[in-house]
Length: 436
Image (cartoon, rainbow, N blue to C red; front, top):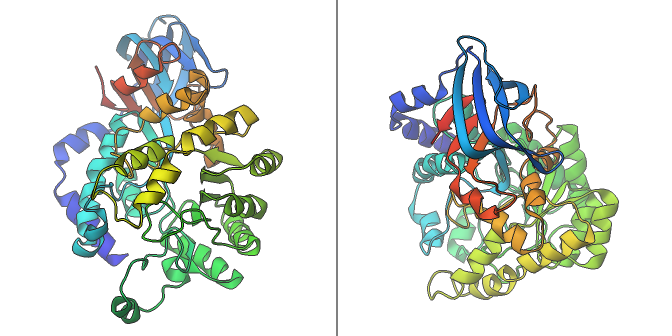
């Protein structure tokens, strides 16, 4: 943690302070946004012309038509554009980004290198229209969150998991792939490092995440695609271990997200009470039924699946132990998302960005629509539904009293989902970061 703090301090020293100050300076004056169209995330309908009034980082009123403004009110005219609530990506990793060098970089680079990179990744994500993210695994994220909240760097609002919780040899065991000499030197990781093997370990690991300043708990309920291990779908927790994590998380007001590809691991995670299943590649009818029964959310991350399946075709992009998992599992996720949507499972938006390039997050909308989800439903998944997953009631819609997180795209994204790739206005907490 000390190394990460030092890394972020070094990053901040390199930030052009004049630019950041301009973006983060608050004003008590009322601002008006004239939107040619407005997406109502509760109904999923695109409404006609509206004027949105913003003051002190909050939406104070939403008026139909081109409202007459009081003297001194600043205004921005978003002609030809649709205003939407700022999007939320419920599954990102801002501390890194996939490349053929990713595995060796873990040994060659220092925390400071990853921290420098995270600052740029955060800004790209914000400028793509994502005013909030849930970072599901990475030591940099809680500190990056704090720097953004303090106005030191630009980025989305971060709900940070910190270190994911795994079992020995599981997807988030940080020593996977180490040789015997290095493993012996470092010793087996334990709950402090997020690796558990018992109910008591499970409780300790959650409490450590609380101590580290996490906002949410992430577990790796099955093997993973990109970890240096053979299985991508074997279950890796008992139901009792999951339940101990969830119960302890509830003590601290945390929700629990479960990375899961295999059917049995998903089933155990749902029975254990997790809030969401991430990826869900081999989700069975039984698991879908359990999820509907218990109200468990599904975050498909179709983008990541398609990205790794594509890169598995490239010689040398992944280690050979990873390549067959990427080809097999990655290609399946979009079909699973389609089946889950038809079945009535609750779906929210997430990309697993960091697997693919940060800033390209909105492409997930296009893949969701390809899977059979109506465009309006896909947009709701990243707005009002994402807020439900997070357990917050101050974002996810353009309405009086909510955070002034507002973005705009040319045209009508419900009529043409491709418009999501052209975000040209971004406001977060009443501060404009991008405009036509």
